[in-house]
Length: 160
Length: 241
Image 1: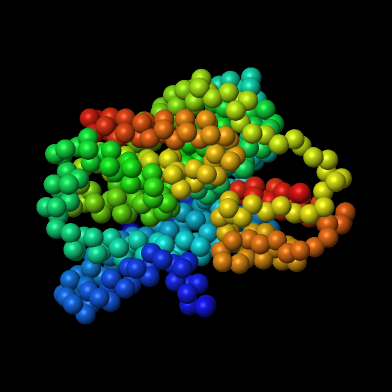
Image 2: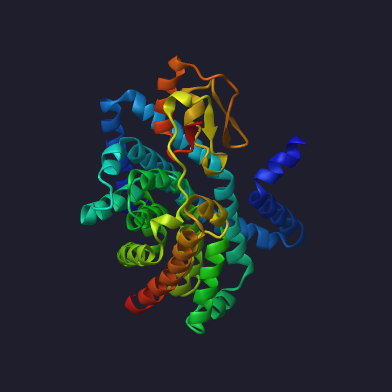
């Protein structure tokens, strides 16, 4: 375990103890919630983690490098943003997935656009959003989120 | 029938397992190294996963959301925007889980700008999630993306408010609480945390990872209990009808 994970466990442990002292009931309720969420997602999480292994093994790094690498950056960024918009996986498992792509040589620019549209743009949840907030709001918010995802990605490419 | 249901609910893992089985039969070497490559990510994930879920739930339980929500309104200005960021960042669940919360705030008078901030912050900014991002992609990556995202959300929230007026958002009229005769559960927003089932098993039940409301006649003495679960539901998917 790296320092980072250990300190996160430390912080959470402290918060947990404080929470327990302040209210046992509230703490137990929140633990129930944590367990419920984890149980719901575990199938998807395990599935994606094993998928990562398949991707790394079966797709040669050169292919990933040429498709998602520094050449034709704009196109790969826009395509990644589109894929992110239609995918509905928890952001939680998206990080190791994207991390594994970057590790074998993918550029961070498409990686960022995928991560950002994954969470902010929702094609699958669009009907729900339209129902609650109206067509105009849903369309405007999703289109702007898509554009900003690409701007964020390109800016990160320049900074890093 | 039960097996079909299990497969339907776990499409991804079913496809991945089948691929592995085929691979083990065809090219065992590749299959073996796939498992080995996955192991690294599985171990990393096991180290950080429980802590993220626990932290998210504790934050969700303790952040005084009622206080934050009362700080909204058309005139709330910078304070309103800041509160919107906090509310979005400290809540659990995916973006669609924020829809009912935002709808309620709109009824209470929150501005379009603030609703966009909550939705976007809810989607991308989560403190435990930032930790996860830093672990797999590096702290620098996480920090720069966070800063750029915050700036983008602010710009976006003002842009949306220019184009979209409140009149274009459908808002139902408030009903009298005395006329309530049952419980309305918006299944599409349920994140399956199971809190309602644990607290009021006589009224709620988890079926296929989603909460279901059992049929019953609403009596006055139940209203207080139900009110408390309506407030506790992390995505505000439960309401009287």
